[in-house]
Amino acid sequence: MKAEALRDFTISESIFSIINIYINGNLSVKMGILQLNENLSVRLKALQLYIYWGALKGLNYIA
Image 1 (cartoon, rainbow, N blue to C red):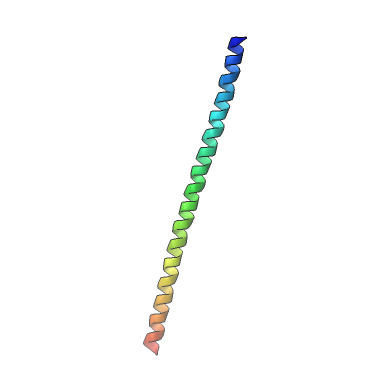
Image 2: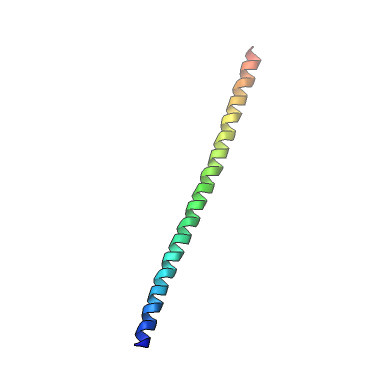
């Protein structure tokens, strides 16, 4: 009886470990995607400002 209870405990512990690894891995992937999106957003904003600055300089040159 003890061996069976021990086996059940290790199986449930293993399942918990697998779930825990999946959740932590999934969270780290999501955090990586959020960081990537944030970096992309900053780069796009910088590009947008660069284009606007170039357009303003061009308009100033024409005027």
